Image (tube, rainbow, N blue to C red; front, side, top):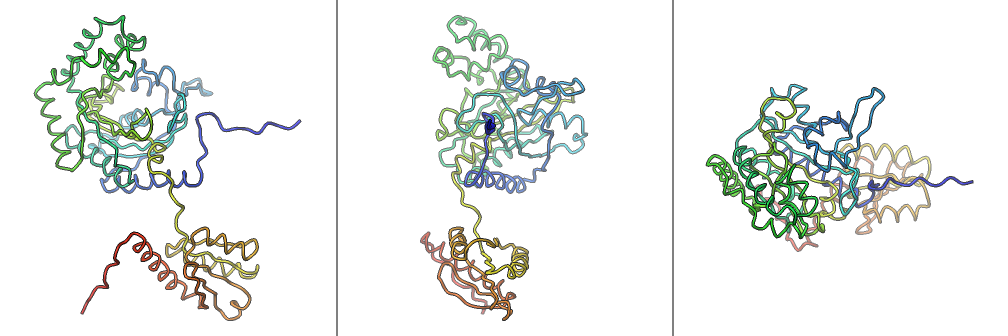
Amino acid sequence: MSQKTPQAIRGTQDIFGAEAEAFAFVVETFERVRKLYRFRRIEMPVFERTEVFARSIGETTDIVSKEMYSFEDRGGESLTLRPEFTAGIARAFITDGWQQHAPLKIATHGPLFRYERPQKGRYRQFHQLDAEIIGAAEPQADVELLAMADQLLKELGISDGVTLNLNTLGDGDSREAWRGALVDHFAGVRGELSEESQERLDKNPLRILDSKDPRDQAFVADAPKIDDFLSSEAQDYFAKVCAGLDAAGVAWTRNPALVRGLDYYRHTAFEFVTDRLGAQGTVLGGGRYDGLIESLGGPHTPAVGWAAGIERLAMLVGERPQERLDVAIIPLDEDGLADANRIARDLRGRWNTVEVFATGKIKKRMSRASEGGALLAVLIGEDERLAGEVTVRDLHGGEQVRMRPADLRDAVAQAQNADWLRGLERDGITPPDEPDFG
């Protein structure tokens, strides 16, 4: 009896080829951009005590009640695979003495886990980028984080058609006054709301503003607006964020319906959205969570952050080709393999991409080199070894010459320059003139 072939778990994915290249491009671009803004890299545990997420995300949210992967370890302790980064980061800020570094700018990326219905760009094991500024209460922190996010999307080449939606939740007093007005507004029509919104009215009334249910939409449209409850301090804070974004060249659109339901959120809330990913159009989102660290037992600590799904960003990026292959080395017999490895090591030490095609028929290996986009093929046979040379074939122009291995570095540089000029020609760009130092 044959065994059944094991299948991937629903909601997980095996990433390969062009998709993997797009995924890597997103991560590499994020790493480059976060260094421009001097955000420190951190690594966080994949699991925490369940209470870290239950207290920070909120006992009544769907994430805690339905979506977390929680389990009991051998010591009888309840642990949870992280469904998001911020709670663990807040815990580390308290327990690891990170307060001494505040204001602290940190960034990370990696896998997260939620048991939810898989859909386009969303998985049960998914990956996020995350950036936070902890210990900074001024509007400039919000501006810097949003400028960083905006630059990331531009560097990825996906900013066209992506809109920054911006709102304020006010300070604590403003938010509480608004919350009370929303409860009064929706309580009068409780029976006409969706079942989910009726439940939220008692536990999390701001979340009703998020509802897409037609039964709720009619009442959401004329619900009280946060602007009617903002204190002068909260108005001033939001005005400074908006002015800072304008000065930084970050385009934004006010969305007064954009909310965060948990009580520790304050002031700025934001989402970068697009219509290119179906109904789930958020590609990056975040906000200011001044009350979170205090809710976990730490000191009052202002903080702001954002997260973005790597899979969803990669979908917008589209297919990415594999890195260019500079040199394909083809030993014509087994005795040429040692020379091939020596030459490969030398060229790679100078940051050239090299692949040794050591097996198969010569014609097939040449075809694989051409299909891989190699600029040059280096052939090593008995005649070449006896002469202390290699045969170099230009796979674009077809020219073939013999040379000493020591001359390969210059040959590769010339081939790279010729490829660059061909790229300019394809794009209709006139190459720059040689500088005149006379």
